[in-house]
Length: 413
Image 1: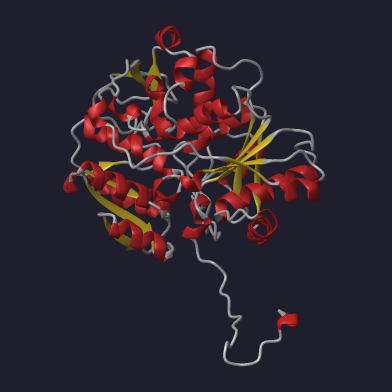
Image 2 (image 1 turned 60 degrees about the vertical axis):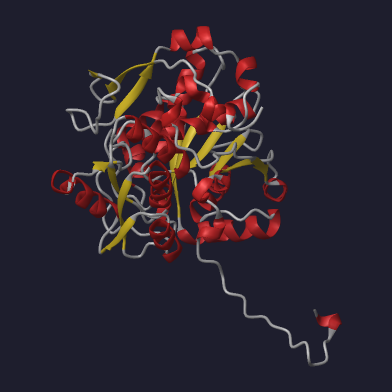
């Protein structure tokens, strides 16, 4: 069966309504929504009894790989509205050198850098743009630290939807360039991502765009949810003990926790769910502080700084959902400094041959720290998330050269 079978085959859909994640109030499906009346994220709810009666593991395994195989647990009603750039199943890559050095069971990295536009943002934006198309939205806008903007630009162009994107002035040049090249209009802003988000929110009425900021529309979380669906299936429906996730806006962590709950409800998984670990940089760690102090909402982190730009999010609209997933799972939030992130990035590339993005390297550093602190044991099965290709980030310069016209001392090479 070809990959295109997922894109061409009509499937039954089971969305019943949307629900305010904070108050529980129900909202109608199939209409345009941003946040709830309470100013909180809306979650998509399904007739899970209907899914259980309709979808089997055998039927699922017979379909081509890729996120669109999970249609019964996704919100797109009509196949014609799917927007795809070839979303693959991302591999699980072991780190044997790391395991040997730490004396621990081999950790697995789910390498999201293999997706279109080189990052996990493709999952969320594929769903957000498909639903924008389904709901008749013609223009979208968002703030970005880089990778989300690239994904939105690509999928919006694919769908024939106009996109406008705002990014902090220090966003890596490769991200700004790819956003513009893939059809969006991109602006650099003298501020952080939440400052860019304020511009998007303030311009909605006058500019007429739809805000697809993290968790300010209901469907990016459904795309990110597929990380959890895919991981469970890859591991034979036996989930790992611990998941380390680089956490900025936190859509992926929230989405995976939602995925595991839905999979348990339809009978695909049983037993204990993974402990969810929110990984942040010490220069921007609002979730870590909120987790430590036991509060439900994290105050804005002032003077946020880290070279891992994807987790430089001073304040997350879904903070309470991140903290809820961490606490319900028995997990924790942990911060690592930039030196530890750089060291983990370098070691993983040199020792295990896997080039991580800085945010992915943060999960390696956090795993090492958590082992040392006794927060996880060496025997536990651990999955780390690498959220983007390391090739999208500035790489260290190499100045070593060789003159082919001069005598070469081969023994010294």
